[in-house]
Amino acid sequence: MNGVLRTVNRVLLGLAGLVLICVGGGVLAAATGLSVPSWWPWYGKHDVLLSEADRDRWRSEGWWWPTVIAVLAVLVVLALWWLLAQLRRSRLSEVLVESGDGEGALLRGRALEGALAAETGALDGVSRANVTLTGKRSTPAARIRLLMEPHAAPDETLDRLSDEALAHARNSAGLERLPAEVRLKAVKHRAERVT
Image (cartoon, rainbow, N blue to C red; front, side, top):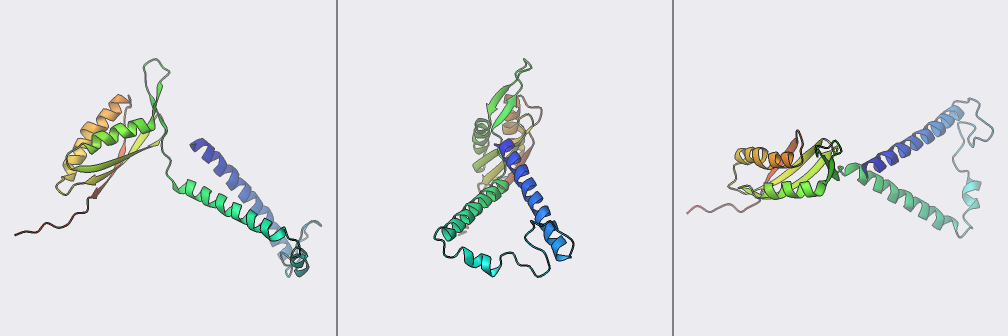
């Protein structure tokens, strides 16, 4: 999925850049009075994109406005899909496990995430753990979000996370290193009444 998204990004950005450079350069040339090709629609400083005659020509056609609206709606949906794909952080789908035979084996990223989240969630003071693997399949990294109980000691939890859960995940996947970014958040609770 990441490779496909990268290719789509490059093609879209390349096409958008090419169109913008060509159209912008042509409009700039026409506006400054430079000679433009005979097929170019704008010739001078006072030309408009659509003349009044061009705008009136399509009004009587019944298919015109539904087509324009449908094309614009599709463009908006595609632009929103592309934007959301950019904002969503990529999740690693598989991890390359060194098997000793030079070939390696593939471990599902979700399986390693689940095992790491289960072990981390079982630590004292952790209410819930959410793990996401990122990076390359040969050099993964973990993003861990912990929801901490009110009585938890964050420094002890981080030490145990590093020494136990991350070490087990690293060793079981045969990784040299497994860097992790950990975010802690406290469980919301009502203040205790002292009597």
